[in-house]
Length: 371
Ligand code: G6P
Image 1 (cartoon, rainbow, N blue to C red):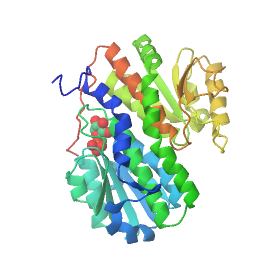
Image 2: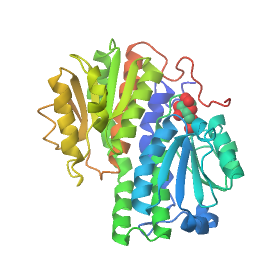
Image 3: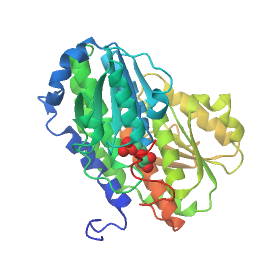
Image 4: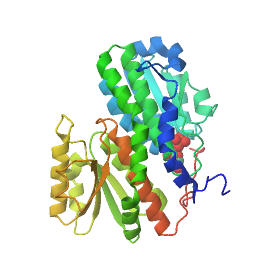
């Protein structure tokens, strides 16, 4: 009903507007004196000191949140992390032991493929942690421990606010793990916590300046193919941007790792092809920014139309991109939580321009409870 949508034309719009709170509420009560403290994982703390591997299992958008989390958890806690689609995981006889932690991510907590992966992991001796948005759902009940995201109920079939909440939970988990394993110095931990707690206000700024992306979406209603490029944590954001466009607007869309461009995807570039590029921060010390700017030049030289999502004040992209969507400055790990918001808005507005139902796209279900 209209009242449930809180004045918004559809649930997806309401849920995009709730992305800041989804992050803030997931942080609530989990930071004490500037340090991450996850009391709900207390029973797992000895296990977390002993594990030699983390395997993340999930489907759809949750799997992309997992891919973002992998970069952070591995970097901060110095534990190898892999991400696997839940439906692939249990059919390849994965190597598991009591020193493997299997982290499942699921908004609904009812996705059958993810549930079966968790059960398989437990039966083969691994410890299981559920990151879930639904209190008391099946997956958390089947897991050794649970870290709830507090995004609030998500009604639109395509996931939006749950994605940023899942990244938040993974970052909290990564910082908690790093603390237990003494792999990060306290100063670095505190700086990361500050950057994370600053995210909700920065997403608000992105939402406040979203008219340009809406205009672009309306102009592009006839577009037949859109590519998305990203690197490091921007790579799963590119995958998420492409998934949203397929789900909502029924447009052929593909996400790529920017470094992979020259190994194949560049063959797709022809005049007029629209390419979104998630640009790493120019302050990133690994010089990924320069590499992605050179990717933009390569695709621009072949006539593509580039829409860059870049940090405010990033002068290097301006001469090469057709459009620059600016996002506030954030640390390298926090940029994806901001960069994904314009991509959610773009998919919603393009689908709306085509007259489609953004809450109930064809052929999809909110939670897939069959294998
Ligand atoms: C379905 C939904 C997606 C969602 C995926 C995983 O395919 O349409 O939006 O990302 O399931 O759902 P879960 O509830 O496990 O996060």
